[in-house]
Image (cartoon, rainbow, N blue to C red; front, side, top):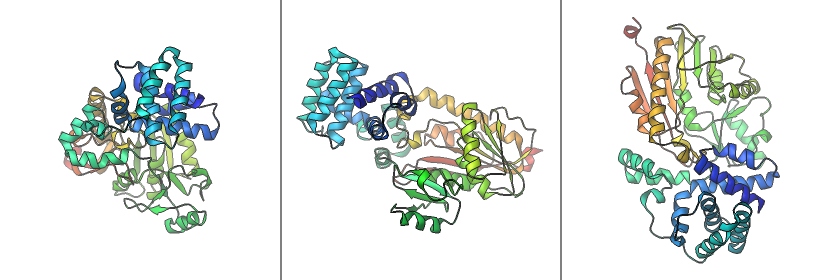
Length: 407
């Protein structure tokens, strides 16, 4: 009952208070044992991944629109009934007991609706956005941009827990052999020579070479963006903008061991973890500074290459962060696009002539992808990766600063 109560509180905060799921879980699950925290995580993330079909399911039996807490309880109960191996009577009774603790007067209503759900089959007809588990506005934008069939195909990946993806800095085949000897499945990624896929939930700290910096956690789509960056002067200066938590920084450090890499991070609260990660990963050629990527503390034409991992709506990583569906709207997308454009402009100011910027976002919204680059000269390549069962959705582009532009 306590786990369901915590799950209801988390869901209400995500859906109606715009709180990120990891923060809600941290606050609500701090005093649970590891096994109970895992169940809490599964319940909350499962509901977020499938909210729209769950809502279509239970709403058939509601005569009035439920309040926020009752809605969260109904989503939670319906998820257990449809997608978990929990006996129906237990799913209903535990959820009702939880709502009784939070809102006693709603317990009868929640009990009646969930019993109707338990006695019925899932609805056969769903609206297009419900079928792909997206808000109406997001589905409409992606349908118009990519086509309904493409959206239907890649949204299937959003419903599943993603594998763990690493960038391995030692001999990949040898490292994978060690992991196989531990009884853990490991698969080489196709988008990067560093990438290794492991089962979801793998304990990272127990893997060989963790303490000595043999690997870092980073999706292979993001790795492909890092590999896109090149530098003409191997011992030159590379700026990594919006660097925390440091996975891309570490890849740059290992790819360009002679370069001087400056990791720039605006959020002071994230810098200690960034430093800790870079220390474990033995990135001795990296300097971390606290600065704003829209107002860089560097002179004109001072960087040989720049990796810009710009803030975005995270629409490409909904399988890892399904709460992003509920935390951003069309107004946010437009605001983020303005920030991204400003960061590119500032990056071009400090970039040397013939230098390269790699612009990268974990979003697949065209407004944060090619539309951001419409007015930018020197774009030499763009790649959008749609989400897949083996990698996130991602977009990256190369921007070259010409000598004439520098003059």
